[in-house]
Image (tube, chains in turn cyan, purple):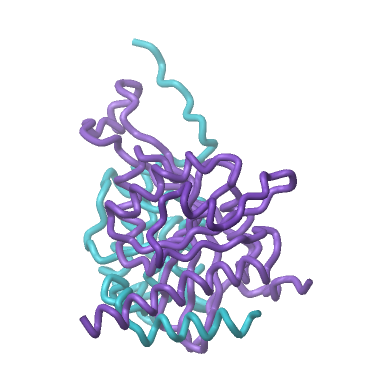
Length: 120
Length: 200
């Protein structure tokens, strides 16, 4: 039996170790732009290192799922699994409404347009 | 030319509750990452999505057998457009084989800005095809490269076979004003479509 080949990404821990072997989050509503913030709930003391880092990252203010993934250098899919767990355990709460409800919302589009025009 | 306001704080302002996204798509080296970086109020971030190729078995835990997964890079940035709305821009690769990722990315997206290069217009066809298949509205921005052939917008519109109401603009992905104008054309178009849908 040949030894396992080293992975090209220099990641310290393999994703499935971080997620305890799971490939899918416990809830399906997380989007790349779901906004997250740490809850004033249970202390992060019982959490593993990644979950603790994630919770601390979201304590000073809100960040999107994508930003959390970027700052923690984790793939989006792994980040979603961790976030879903932390929502279940009450450490993280989501701020934004479900994004799928938005694209046809003229009010939001107008707000985006005004914001962009103000930059010109 | 003013530079984007640099912020030491990576976090969103306290009142921001609503996040929306626009995709920046285009073929390899067309300037997607440049445009995202030009417009973003934060230092652009990078992440990746690991995807299983369509129809393949998930075998990631099994080790070396079967190269069934692909890693797709995402570069993104953000613009806080009002006291409570933030816009995220995702630069995504446009290849047909990433349709699965696109489906995920386009869910909830307002629309897409297709960056095109007049020297390689043919490569934009696949991308526009995928967007149409997924039902995501888009505008096309011609990233102007030095030495690019000077076609008129009418010629390009014809070459790309764009619908009459699809916005087509020129843009310099390195320039904030120019890149913002390209996004404005897209959002104006999205707003027009919305009011048309409402009155239909």
